[in-house]
Image 1 (cartoon, helix red, strand yellow):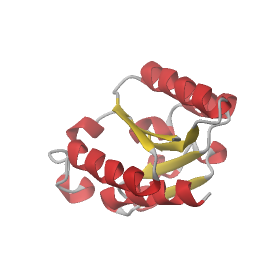
Image 2 (tube, helix red, strand yellow; image 1 turned 90 degrees about the horizontal axis):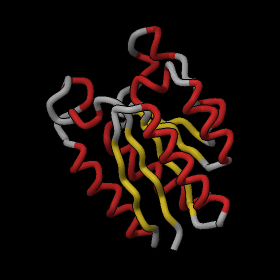
Image 3 (tube, helix red, strand yellow; image 1 turned 90 degrees about the vertical axis):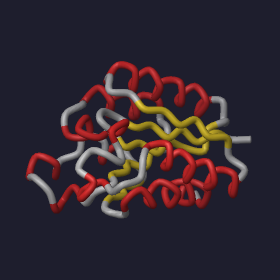
Image 4 (cartoon, one colour; image 1 turned 60 degrees about the vertical axis):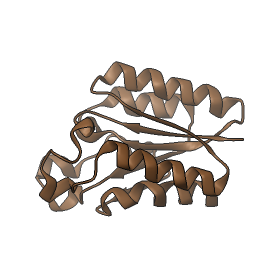
Length: 147
């Protein structure tokens, strides 16, 4: 059984209370349930995690990379939050491990502040999804299943 990693970066633990007009009313626990259902449909094992710390996220990408090298990873869905726009370290971790990455954002980052328009992850991602709300998560898992 292959694993899907779903990683969430800074402030995503605040889903449901942080700017609900932008991010919606669903919580991170609700997102995890959506991901679990999508993984179950495809026979995947789910690793669902959140951290506000860049180094922890790098370590988890490395962990996913070990599964990738062993042929046990379907892919990585990553909502890096603000680190998307600032972290060369996360992009280097993805590039260095060779994991299949779908970059995901709940809001349409291109319709927001200019600093959100640049992604360090996009060049190392298989795909970028944004603006579909939390429904983007199960859609990203469906996409991994189709690759």
